[in-house]
Image (cartoon, rainbow, N blue to C red; front, side, top):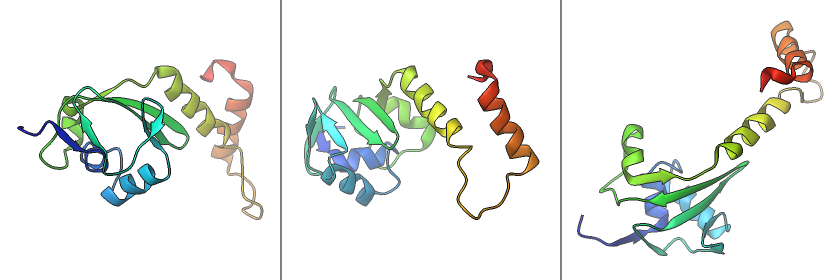
Length: 130
């Protein structure tokens, strides 16, 4: 592609980090997208090789721009345009957070089912589960 830069909100949507371009724009405005530790606006042009930090609660993802797609990509093509630099420890942290929240139940939602109770017990007592 002849372009050497692209708007960050458009690129985030094209590489499937956000479902809609407006969600990518809102994330930029909310300060959830950073380049070199500084918040950026949705219209900021990015270049190939830029490293972008994205806060997708509770995950903090770090990606490197490899190329600019012509339009939104299929999920299998994303690695050709974006390199995931997020450490495995970050994915493990998110997995642990999701597992520990399995025990939380809304007030008035009733007792846990037998299956969900077994999962809760396994998470609480089996240290090798993770």
